[in-house]
Amino acid sequence: MITEDDYRQYIADFNGACAGTGMNFSEFFDKWYEPDATFEYIPKAAVNSGKESTVAFWNGVRDIMEETIRDHTRFITSGSQFASEAPIDFLCKQDLEWVGVHYKAGTSFRLMMAAFYDVGENDKIKYTRVYSIYNEHYQVT
Image 1 (tube, rainbow, N blue to C red):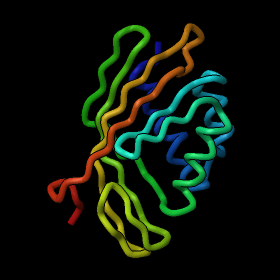
Image 2 (tube, rainbow, N blue to C red; image 1 turned 120 degrees about the vertical axis):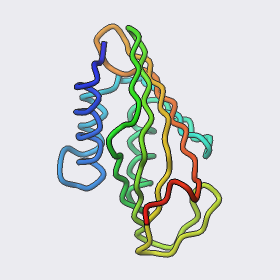
Image 3 (spheres, rainbow, N blue to C red; image 1 turned 60 degrees about the vertical axis):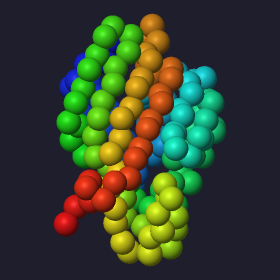
Image 4 (spheres, rainbow, N blue to C red; image 1 turned 30 degrees about the vertical axis):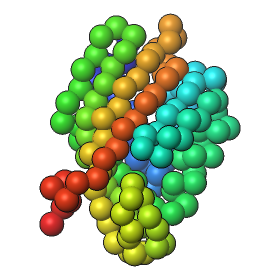
């Protein structure tokens, strides 16, 4: 079972990997995920199965923008499952389109994320599904 304190550490480790100030994504995956875990990102419909695919996805995102998951607004756990909701801030490293909106290099935007996790018997994540949505209301001014 992953507790709310564990989840806070998970987010701190992920943010460190994103910013390049902590472990890398490969180390992060090994610490938190089952070797054959699946990470699904919606709305891009990106389904990544296993370490190589998932780490490549995370590295691909980091190549074009810096991601920071903020403190969660909700956290629910039930034995082998947990869920959270949190804002995510992105800083664009290049011009890009993300979730149907175009951004210039150097600009930032915020998405709201809801994530659902299944945890295996050894307390590592075996399945993650992340939903991210853009709304003008979520943007930081």
